[in-house]
Amino acid sequence: MMEPDPTMSDATSNGPGEIIVEPSNGQPANACVILLHGLGADGNDFKPLVPVISLPSSLAVRFVLPHAPRMPVTINGGMRMPAWYDILEMNLGRRVDEAQLRTSAARVHRLIDAEIAGGIDSRRIIVAGFSQGGAVAYEAALTYPQPLGGLLALSTYFATADSIAPSEANRELVIEAHHGSFDPVVPESLGKEGVERARAMGHPVTYRTYPMAHSLCPQQVADIGPWLASRLAQD
Image: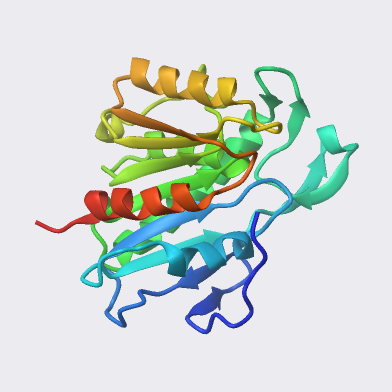
């Protein structure tokens, strides 16, 4: 992914758990994007993304970038690293520790709760995630008990599609899914399968593919800004 930019002065640590990037227009936040990193990274991985997302100056969007806990990861020989859950097998379906994944999703729910308690409407909160973080984002967003603004699924898969207990409040949550056509880590077939499972559940899903590996690309970043703006636009 991306190297962190130590010059970013608008990002402040919210304890050991996450990084907060406040709105660039200096206004109090009235919308929020919670963005989860991938396996082996941390919240710093997406700090450089925030200032290059082209959002209208009228939007006051806070970005919350949580850090995953360190834990042994089976597919990496039991090595401890930042992870949202253990991956037990790198088979086509990605056998994962669903209990750990749901623990991470519950943490996202608490982050959403905190934003709502601070005055942000739940419908102006987007949950997003890359790779392993995206699998948590699927679970967290679709099970949250209040209506959200959308789900952004980046180079990821729907790990809990067979066992999820969706919330009625987000039965029709809008999903934007992106994947690289040359992804050697999470095959595009897994991303497409997750999209089809979400569509079968009734979600409107836009799927975009890019000529890249397991990463982000400039064209994709250019697409993320308008999508966020459309979901967070105020009436």
